[in-house]
Length: 107
Image (cartoon, rainbow, N blue to C red):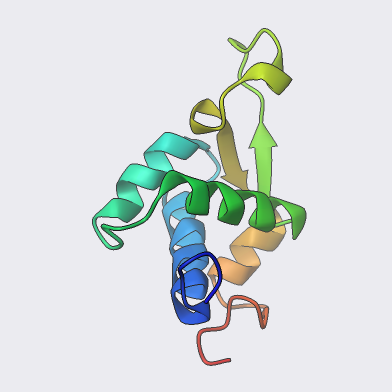
């Protein structure tokens, strides 16, 4: 278990993040909005876990951090208020056109 979560749960949450962002593509969602949409499926999800998953998916190139015009200094914006959107690579993963063992629930 990683940080109190099973590998299967981590994969499910990461996939649901992609699905939530795919629903609004090409627009972006704030991390707080992503959390609220996932709480219906994962009621025990904590923001710290979501934050790790968002950053992981961004490092993989599936998400991009979008800086809003209203942010005076993007580095100081709290994570809950940061905006994320899917990249083209993220769309391909969400649509299962390409596979990633770290997200494949069968793995």
